[in-house]
Image: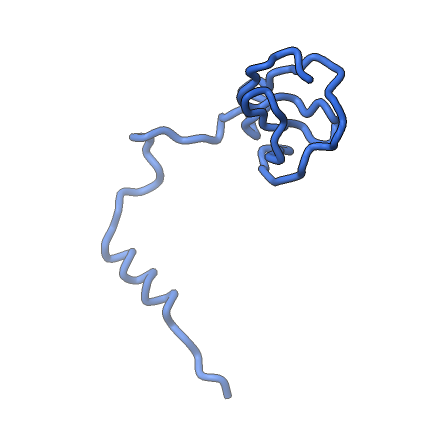
Length: 98
């Protein structure tokens, strides 16, 4: 079926239905990915004729991973319990229906 019998991971979809398809133990799965969004679509019931092409990390992650954060990265202002309390009260405010 495939030239890489033990294919495991994201590969370019050999059926050209999606950008990438997950392979497990050399078999295509129903897990697919387009523009970084995963969904499911069962593989067609036909053999794969072409050689598998492993997806690169840049093509797997939308934006090439430049938008990902790491542990310890600073994000905005430090935690302020007063602001958090105000935000919780604002979110829970309800208005009676007339």
